[in-house]
Length: 476
Image 1 (tube, rainbow, N blue to C red):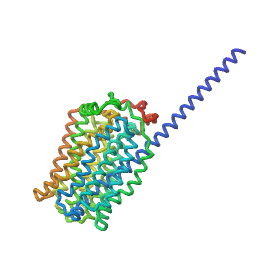
Image 2 (image 1 turned 45 degrees about the horizontal axis):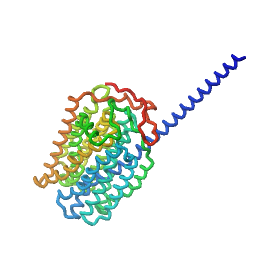
Image 3 (image 1 turned 45 degrees about the vertical axis):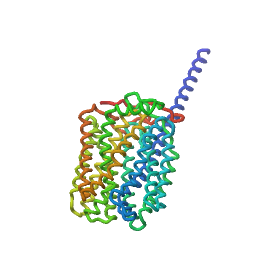
């Protein structure tokens, strides 16, 4: 009898342990499911916000003609509002990146506040009666956008495991294409009838409502085992972060190519509509259609193509991200050269040229940004992307429009000025290709994002503290 009672007691203990294990598994499953839902909601909110941001940015090109007529400006002076915006963005990029990585402010909260700031400032353009006030308004827009850059990609990195991350980044950049196309079309349709101020307000007011979605984005835990080497603690100073970033050869190669790419593309965004109007006898509406169709179809297709091609290449070549960026950059430069020297007025041919160019350009984004998220410590990603965009803005975005305008005024030919952009993009391609041959192979994610385990989705730690889980081991 005592033995039977002991056996029954053991069985009861085993049953209780099994029940506890089942309850723990169910609880973990619910937590993972909730976090995956949070991840996809965060991506949706960030992607939608990015679309409005790019819509507001891209409409500057089609509106240059109306600014020039309204304020009696030269080609160089029409670039000053964008210079004011980019200069303010430049001044706060590193500050916001350092503040987020040091946990002085939550990334999701900063993203929400700064998005509300730039959308409200854009809507305020409707009330700008003078050119000076317009430049001031654009400065406020730049301040708001400075918080978006580092926060968005850093949040995506912490929400998605390495196998899925390149596709999440592809969606993020595809939104740029959709928003850019929307901005170009809205500017081209509204400005001739209602003025350039109405075009800005048409993006700023709805964007202010969309920014409210960021309020419900949760702050995820920081990934601590996503990189093969130790990173820095969040309390480390800005000097230590700069030293770590500057010592990363992949970052230096990406920075050099990104600066050249930023210079080239900002010149295209600011001047290509004007180029089509001058040399191909197109109206503002027709140039808007060319750029809008190319941006929407080519941008979305290019971002998805870049992610798919890079994932496929990883099976066969080393450093697929570097090689893919080089190939797409050479294609981009070649297509741009054809578009600049082409003298025909065919709407279809000009649209096809612009389409191929945009596909090649946007295809570089997923492998480029995924490269940095895979090789940089997650604790400094906000500062990393902020510093990259700092130099891209300083040496690319800020310089390109006035340089193209000055060369156009000096030579009397916008076509000659556009050839400068072709040369700069070739330098970007050479930078990527040199990195491919010189640097060691880059980290390789799992064979497919669909193979990522459910445990790869991090569960939020209380207060947004660093969490830990098990990731797939990389292979070379």
